[in-house]
Image (cartoon, rainbow, N blue to C red; front, side, top):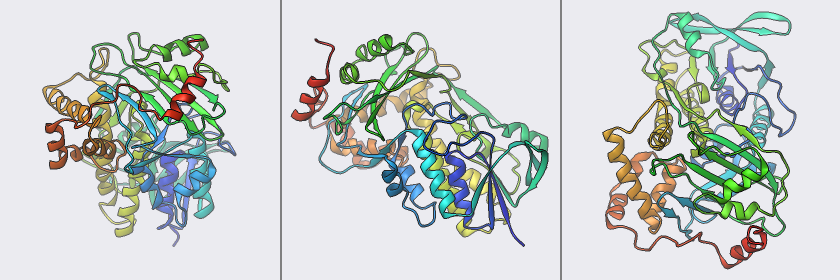
Length: 466
């Protein structure tokens, strides 16, 4: 008897979940309500799709094991993604100062447009598995509180029921999973939103001639000044382009959508390097603005009852402030949890879905803690305020980051947590604690730690002083 799995949503989380399921079922049907482009183009249903995305090392490592016969790293690089060392290939101004750049190898991250990444993953999954995508909108779950048995969906030809041996909801932040569960008799799902009111504004530029190897550049927001946060990033992406993303929190930090205001905002950041880089660059797009940036979490793993054969992943489970670059890595890590559980437990075994749902809470917890522990400090954040525990953790974390500006040992711990190759407990290892208590052996850089060649490139691009 053939077995079928259904995945709701053909985004990154959905396609990775489909790849994991493809190894244990005869058929995987991915249901997607939106039209999918044939190439790496922006599509509806991705509110942050036009803004900067980083695929951290932990997420890439999880991806490597999900699509049979494919190295996702090589596949994404062949598609045009860029690989950047977090230890040496980045200029980063933190609230505690500039990070030094080290010759020691650190975690790698991939940069590209979200459109390219989603398309490349979708192409790889469809080419190497029996997964198929069907255009349809899911209306509700079939089954009862004990077990999900499929979905009721609507298509251009009308409504129908599609039975399944396993269902994954990866339909994104607009998921109706709480309503669906309630209709099955499972209620009381706790949800939490922490919203700093972040606004993203992004514009794509042609990479100036001779600047193709200029480091990824980021000026981070400072949440500890009791005023709105403001940040900016120059991200190298496919097609010899720079994606420039600005982000600011409510109350006066929001970036503008007009070209003159956009440039002025970059020059008014704590360091004007982003503005200096783009002041003479050729813009290729308009400025795209998005406000769907809140941290939102559904605590499904804490539900007293959970139906068999049903799992929720990706943004349907939790969303994070995109400024911290965690969402894609979390989705991959969640799919990795599903894959590992499927490898050791039969698809229809009792308790499998519950173990997966509890297992994926681990990467969600790590990302949630990192995002919310900073967002609660912005003055007009809604849904959260610093607790005594937050104050203690923040005091130590700030000291770690301050040490990391001049200590390789502390910096490597910060990189591991940021890259999601380790959890926050990495900051509490004896070596990291000792380094933090000792303080940085080197002073933080007085300015952006550029090479002589990079300084020359910046001077050549800068039109602000002419």
